[in-house]
Image (tube, rainbow, N blue to C red; front, top):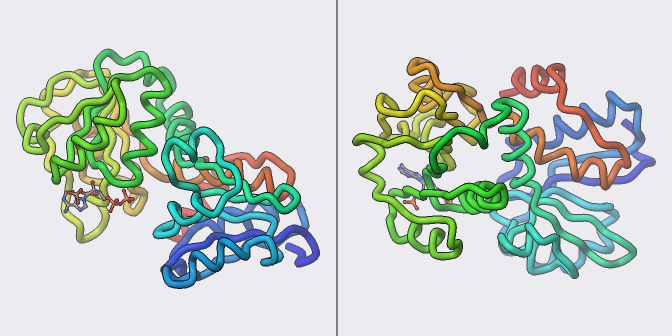
Length: 275
Ligand code: ATR
């Protein structure tokens, strides 16, 4: 890695545990490209100034993570259709002195499903999304863009209602229904932090799920959450969250460093070794 090439990084607070530097540095090294990618801690109090002065930061672009995705969207001169629809940006780049923003979480989520569960769209039944936060918004948007009908179940029902109200193809369901007779969904996705160590598990019973149901989690630590274990034991196809993290990183890398990177088993192993 050379310091002479383009400089990028990931902006968040806290940021120390971000895996993005590992991923981008792995690619820089693999392809022998000049450039640098760092973790950049930006506090909520300084975020607005950081983004409005981004043009003089020396960075060609950046990833943006919690809690700055909305502030980053406000600071951009122009947004991709996806970023505009979500009101949230996770990938920034400069064109001249125009600051542009995209949201590649949607691409990351869909590309991971396409890779790990090919044909997932063909399973009969609607998609069930658990959660209604920022991650759920990207997932719901992506599923609807692929033509699916989406059911949203969230602990706080009003948030599920609100998210569902934004789309004719989405509706909400009671959170307590997850533990009952689930009905047949083609896809079940957890977008909450449930499943992470110490967070408890999604209160769902997959016993009655259809055999063709695909079960996905966006959590990747641990790689196999309680939800995915239950699905595997039930014989269902499962998709863990690591691929979403890797796929969402690729479009930014290509913009800043000029090469579309590959998501390889070596990269997966490098990230897994660091989890
Ligand atoms: P993110 O942007 O990562 O999605 P968020 O906006 O804070 O984060 O949303 C977190 C999601 O996880 C929400 O759907 C939240 O449910 P509430 O809206 O009821 O808060 C869900 N969540 C977090 N902890 C949970 C728990 N212990 N049980 C059920 N849902 C939980």
